Image 1 (cartoon, rainbow, N blue to C red):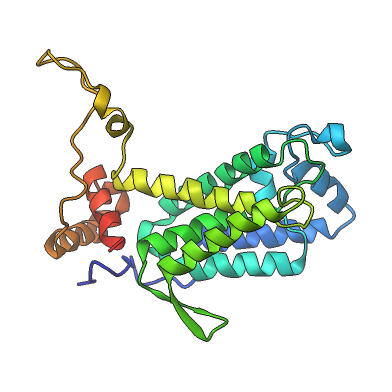
Image 2 (image 1 turned 30 degrees about the vertical axis):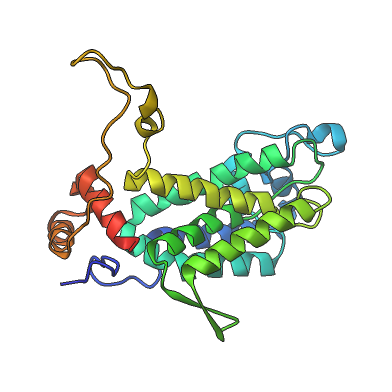
Amino acid sequence: MTSYNQPYRPGGFQLIPPAIKIIILANVAVFFLQTTPAGNFINTIGALWPIGSEHQGGLPFRPWQLVSYMFMHGSLQHLFFNMFALWIFGAEIENYWGTREFTTYYFICGIGAAVINLLATMGSPYPTVGASGAIFGVLLAFGMMFPDRYIFLYFLVPVKAKYFVAGYAFIEFISGFGSKTMGSDNMIAHFAHLGGMLIGFIYILIKRNEYTLSGFFSRFRQSGKKNGLKLYRQDKSNAPVSEEEINAILDKISQHGYASLTPEERRKLLKAGGK
């Protein structure tokens, strides 16, 4: 039986799981199109243009850019390192969560990063491209799921994932305020990176059920009526998850698939992965 602190591997561990494979192929294909005569048109309509950029010599923002910018890159080096990071940190996450859950998380992080970047770069004439916001969300997920896993900086220096992620976030925060135009003029959208991490953090907390909207407003719950509506719901997420429970959940996945799990079973699986 697979141990609860290891990823579930239906049919064996997939070196390049489906979602990551499709995302990488799509990014490579779009980058190839960017190098063709149609590249200028693709860059114009697909990059994430800041709100109000047309008043500063740029082009206007369009809603589809919240997604299209994630498939565009400024250079082959930019593309390579983003896709390499997606594979290194994302493969185990997708094998653990399943393709549908991973894909949802990836695009939520990418779109959330775009929204935060729009707020941080409002009025700037510089567009943003790249999958970095979504990939920083994946990096955050890896740090939360496997906090004590070692990452080797420059293939030499071992650093636990939780410290690596925290350090990277701090560097991005400082770098974002150090940029003259909030990270856009030097081709690095630091606030998009931070946005991907922030949205990923919120998403994972919600999925683990550690924080809920009702919990935030618990102090305002109704009183005096036994049957009255209460905004507070008791949080049971701190209850320990036994290895027997996780083994039973993994057996259920093996027989019926990840989609057969109840919300409580999914929460326990995510909570076990965070140990």
